[in-house]
Length: 88
Image 1: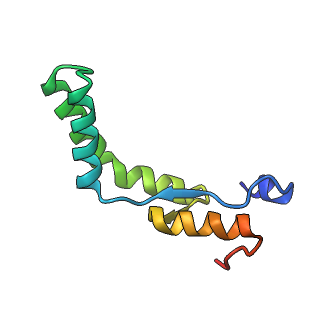
Image 2: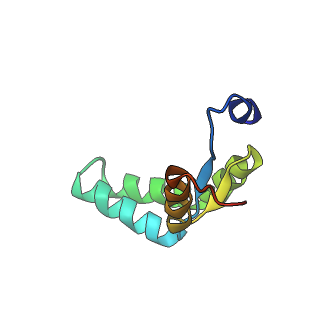
């Protein structure tokens, strides 16, 4: 990430921080509606992803991403586009 910043290719990196339960329910509802797999498989997969989410977020922040909620990300990107980057 530092090399991308040095070259001017990266303004920021974000890892979205969302309520895990809401993400689980949205994903499950979508997959059930699309009949992707058997409901039992979808439920088991969803629970596994729910449990893994904190580790994924830790890994991404460890690589240099900023953990942020969607609203924060949108405001930060809007500031960059307006030419007024926010201070970290």
